[in-house]
Length: 610
Ligand code: ADP
Ligand code: ZN
Ligand code: MG
Image (cartoon, rainbow, N blue to C red; front, side, top):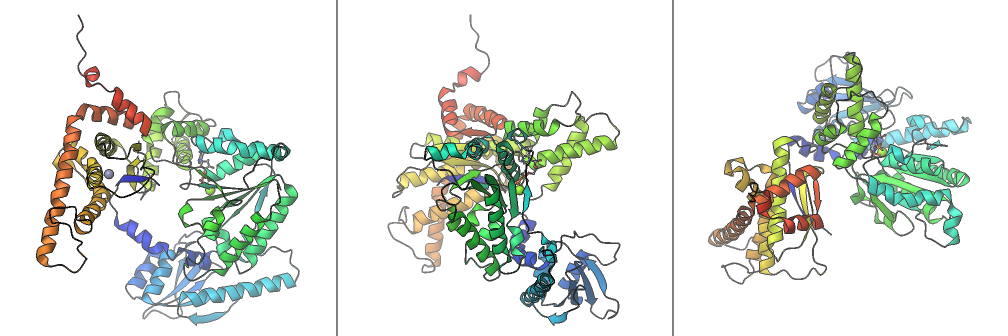
C-alpha cells in the first residue's frame, strides 16, 4: 500500500450534507426509481424546495405521493383539504425521504395507475407496498400474455445490445495505459483460437474503475468496436429498483443471449449497485441485490474454457465491492481509468475538436492547460458548450471567447470537486514539493514515489511514498522524519509565501501528524515525559498539560527542521515547482534525477565567461 499526503480543500457545509444524505440514496432509488421524470415545476406556486422547507418547519401535515406520475400532493397544516399543493418530484428524492423520516411526516402512496390508498407512516412500509403492487401488475401482465416486457418501471433494466458500437480506440484519448492493457482483450476477441491453442489464460472479467466521466463506458464500447463484436450492456443500478427474482433472471437472459452471440462483450455499468459487500446492509439486506450478484457470479464461474465472452464492469467505487467479485476467474483484471493529465486532455480535446469548426488562433494546448481536473466528459462538454455559444453569437468558428466562457460555466458546475487555477495551483505545487523535498533530504524516509498537483476528489494535490517492503517496528528517528515530511507542505507555504498566507489546505496533514505524535508521547514513551504508557481518561489535568507540552515540543522541532531544509534548497524547490506546474505529475525517479542533476549555478544569473 501507498502512503500519501494530500492537500485538501476545506470541507464545506454542503459536503457534509452530501455525506449525510448518501445513506438514503439506495432507498430513494428503490422507491422512485420507476420513473425517470426530471423535476420540472410546471408553473406551480409550491416548489420542491418549498416542500422541503415546509417539512422542516412542520408546516406539512401529510404528503400523498403518486409514483406513476412522480408527483406529490402536499397537505399543509390548516390548509384546504380539497386543494392540496402539487409538487413535481425528482428522479431521486433523497433529501425529501430523509426529511420525511426525520420529521415523521405522514405519507401516502397513491398510484393513480392502481388506485390503492393506504396511509403509512414510514418509508419501509411504502416500499413494501410498491413491491406488492408491482408484483401484482407483473403477474397480471404475464397472465394476459403481454409480450414479455415488463412495463412497470419502463423496463429500464432490460439489457441493450449493439451489434456494432462504431467506436474505436481512436475515439478514446488520454487514458493510454488503460487502452494498452486492454489491447490484449481485443486480440483475444478477434481470434480466440490463437489463444486457446497456446493455452494462454484469457481474462473473463475486467473491472474498469475511476471517477465518473473519465471514459469507462466509452472504452468498453471501443473494445467491442475494435474487435468487431457485439456489445451487451446493462446497468447495475437498474437492478436495485426491481422486484425480487427479476434481476437474477435478467442476468440469466443476458448471458444466454451473449453466449449465442459470442465472441462478444458484456458490459455491466455501475456494478457497485449490485456488487456491494454482501451483508453491508444499507437499509437492511437487499435480497434482490444479493440474488442478482449471486447469479452474476454463477454465470461467470460457469464459463467453460473459452466461451468467448468477456465481461467488463465499471465502477467509481471499487472500495465497496464484494471481494467475491474480485476473485480469480471473475473480475481479476482491474484497470484504473483516471483523470487525464495535460497531454491526455490535449488528446481528448483533439478527438472532440475534430468535428467542430475552430478558429485557427485557438490553441487546444492552452485549453488543456486551463482545464486541470476536467474529465473526458467535461472536456467534451466544454467544446459542445463553446459550439453552442458560437452558434448563438452567429459566429463562423469557435474562438477563445466562447471557450473561456464555457470553461467558466463548467467549472461553476463542478461544485465539490477540486479544480484549481492560478495562485492556488502554485501554492499547492509548493506544498507538495515541500513534502517531497523534506522526505528526500531526511535519509530515514521512504522514497518519494510520485508528486502531483492533479486534483483527486477533494484533494488538490498529493505526494506518494514507497514504503519499505518490511513494515516492522518504527524507530524514533523514522517517526520524527515522517512528522517533518508531513509538515513539509505547510513549511513550504510559510517559507515561500509568508506566515499570513498559509491556508487551511494542510488540515489533513496536521490531523495526521498530531495523532502520530500523541502516540509517540503517550504510548511509545518517546518523549521527555518518560517511558510509560498513558491510558486515555486515566490521567490528571496536570499530566494532560504535560503531554501537550511534549507533543508541541516535538512538532515545533520537526517543523523547524522542515523549514530549514526548504530554506537551504530554495532554488531547487522553485525549480521543482516550475516542472511540477508544467507536467502536473513527477514520478519518483524523475524527481530524484532532477534533484541530483540540479546545480543552482546553472540557473543563477548567466555565468560570465571570458
Ligand atoms: P464514464 O463511463 O467513465 O462515466 P463515459 O465513457 O460515459 O464516462 O464518458 C462520457 C463521454 O465523455 C463520452 O461519451 C465521450 O464523449 C467523453 N469522454 C470521456 N472520456 C473520454 C476520453 N478518454 N476520450 C474521449 N472522450 C471521452
Ligand atoms: Zn500536505
Ligand atoms: Mg459510464
